[in-house]
Length: 346
Image 1: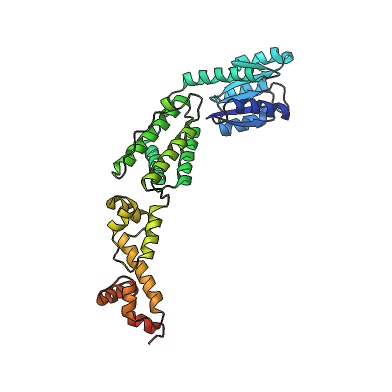
Image 2: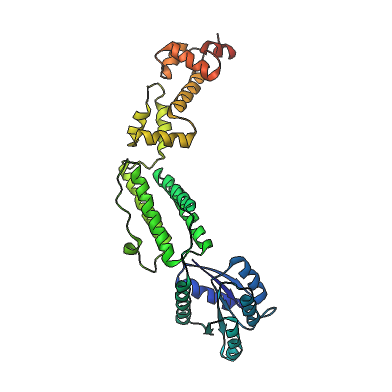
């Protein structure tokens, strides 16, 4: 992602230049505008643009003074002077302030493309790889893996947006960006395979499956969608959150002796992994959750006078009445009879 600042006191020219820049690569540029040098200088301090396109004659602070202040402040930004023939000699004074590119009005799409390609080529030749902390990369991987595994498409897209935002702020562009995205997807597939539940094919290479002009983040989102679809197919088209599905299954089968292995098999998941996932998503173990829901249902049934306590016991999955009484008291502090007495039921 390259950041451009367009500086001109004429709104039509600002908008025209911005449109030309964005048209060249809409997914790889971010633009802002300013109507004079003073406003531009404040924005440069905040946004740290890669490239500034500035007019010469402007109120408050002209282009020449802006170039001088940029050079004086040691900002790492390349300046392009946009000028007419009548101001060209004046604009050449900017050479002493590090300006290397000029573009003459009226600016054409071809002229803009030539200048931007030269700027980017020069920038890439100067760029060094930006160090990305391992902890940051691990966080990206965990966010993506968690989202993909439970088929949460919105969370997966949010994880991609987080990576994109970080890379833009750190100035990670072009070749390094492609390498980062390529490696992230490869790590994701390896992590999914380590779960030892489904087998996923090796991730495609970004170099082999995307053109140089393509957006690496759009490519990543496409690959994630393919992974999501693959998991849906492996789960027999079931795109529900596995934990939520098991909660519903428990709810509909409270009278049965349902085990964690039964639930995991129903979803086609490894029991050990499913146990960890359930605890992570609910803060309860599978057994704790099942008992809690049984006791909550038992309390509702005990509030119905014509239900015998033994009937309630069977209804929530306890054929052993004493075991039901012991479990109920452990969870509520009362035996079923005492609980009924509190409700005024004889």
